[in-house]
Image (cartoon, rainbow, N blue to C red; front, side):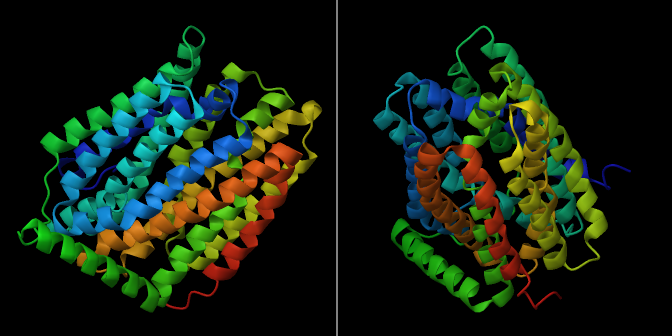
Length: 398
């Protein structure tokens, strides 16, 4: 059977949200092209990424701790509303500084959801004594989202033939508002922290944040899992250059949506394959996958306009393979994180990833303006070796 007993009953609002989340991402294939079209350099685009990452760094732990102290559900809903507002704001004023504000606001909204969303679902399943659905959700949630991402780029290509790219931002924002309505009305929350006044709640938030940091620092496996995940960003630091590179090599701009749809199709399938590798040690499976990504990433250096179809294949492989690792890593990660700090620890992971990503995005943007995206993408892919070295240090595999 595709779904286990009562799986739909308990998880349908989250699965529907995953589909909407995928559908509203029409803007993704065209985002960098949009920013380039309105006059931004790669370095300016990297500054947008940096502002996004900086706001994530500042707000990630407080919002994660507040989710642990108050409500995971309402934290997610607030985040959806803020992000939806930001998405509507970005295309209204196509200037560099207003874009920084819009991206920063979106980052703040996302910090309310990161960590809290996963913790909300895990807590619900634990309350129902359905831990067997943890891995099922991570697999199927990712695949359902990928189904939406198959459809949305195609719709984006159709829409942008008649309307400017910026209209896709409004669909993006609308998706977050719709998700807030669905989860707000139909998804229960079984996490019930003690009620307390604002002063004590904020104090507890700081304590939760400190406990979360101490837990990560003292738990070798969780620390290495987070560290390995964060460092894996280095091999993708040139990702903002992919779509301009493919267009330069010969792909028509309106075809970007179809390329993303093909990638999303395989993103939907590949998480299911991960279940056949759960009997192996996670660190070895993930390391092999990263090695494959390194090899294909480096091969982009040899792609020209004459064989640019090979570049499309490389792009697809590098987009798809991380979705094989995700359910394995998330399921393994949550085995070691206690309930009361789950949202905070998940936020620490996301915060670290965003910080490293935003810093190296600046470096990548500067380098792409100097040397072009092809060289940056190819050579930085080799940096995945550091992530492999970290994962292989994991000893606690119980």
